[in-house]
Image (tube, rainbow, N blue to C red; front, side, top):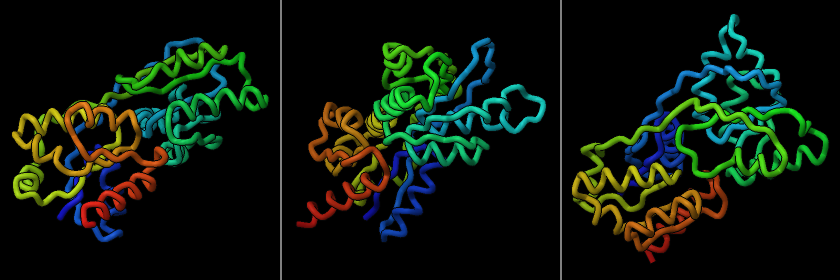
Length: 253
């Protein structure tokens, strides 16, 4: 029996390695594909910090940050607020030195920025640069704007849906050889459902436990008719793995 990981590449490889280390057989179906968007910062704003909600935003701008002739290299001197430890690690690898880590979701990131301003760690009068994806799950710029911040949002990447599932995944569903699916974002959950529907395996796919990183992700699966939807206790992968183990114990009981 296999665990299906729908996370995009390259993060899905690290997830697969972690699952295999726990004794699981893993199938990969990256239902979203990372596509960088050309980054041209034409703003004259004097940035005081950067905010990032995904490691993909770091991956998109990293080549510019390594170019000695690029003015974007100055961004490395700014404090960077990362949504969670995974994104923070990508920022450090890209050359950012001052990285502040939030609790794993956009709401926690917003609260961390607000708290830093209250504690005078961050100057509220400066402008925040939000390195964002093309599709946003919430209006983080608007929420910070309501707290008195000026935010410039720069789209640095998009995640394009993958229309088909790998053949071994379709065969796994047909043979009832997949025992759970891991979901990391609302968009990837929707893309998974669309691909499963197009491949004719939607009923089998929704009949097994769907382990979700957050309640927002879980809502997509419940709306599609999944009856076994479990949500991680916190928005991080270790908690998601805990949810998976709980789902498997329930199936064996």
